[in-house]
Structures are given as structure tokens and as C-alpha cells.
Image (cartoon, rainbow, N blue to C red; front, side):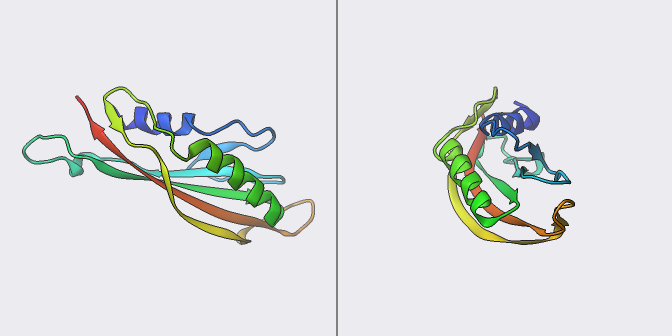
Length: 136
């Protein structure tokens, strides 16, 4: 029933995209493309004072980084097909399916430049939500 197990279950839903690393909470550097995942998961301050199980709204923000807008869109298609409607499975948790609720079209990344081309990376965002309720 750990939050860590729930976070790991979310990360397990991400597909293996050849040549595109997926990391949580930190960005890769260099050339190519990568996927960065940020999660907002339940914490102890969200418990009911009566001790009853409450559903928590969890969010998963996916940052897609690529050298061009079409690359970001291709990654969005892959991630969207893998996540939409899937449930994270973790011991001690009951979850709802992930549903996309927001997206941001590719824009130049103000923080990242491709070292080989000296051009800015493109960055896009997808945001998903699901509920998680402790079962034990």
C-alpha cells in the first residue's frame, strides 16, 4: 500500500520506445528525444480523520522532448495509446483508469539546446488523471 508502489505501477504503464529514455522527475540532456514523467500521488495529509478510505485525484504530467514538432506528436501518439484507459495496479490500492485531461502543443524549449545542431528542442505536454483509494 505504499505510495512508491503506486508510482512504480504508473511508470510500468509507459511503453518502451526504442532510443527514447523515459525518466521520472528529471530530464535527460544531450541529443535525441526523451520522456519525463511527473506524478502527483496521495499523501498522508489527505487521509480522512475518521480513518475511512478516501479516493485521491492523482495526476501524471508527461513532458515529451524531441528535435522537431512532428517527433513530439509521434511520441504523444505512442504515449496516448499506451496510457488512455489503463489502470495502475499496485498492492493496497484501488485505481480508476487514466484519462487525458490536458495537452500542450509542441513549442520551443527555453531550457534545452541540441549540442550537435545548436537548435532548441521542442517540448510538448500531456496530462492524465486517475483516482486511487487505499484498500488496506
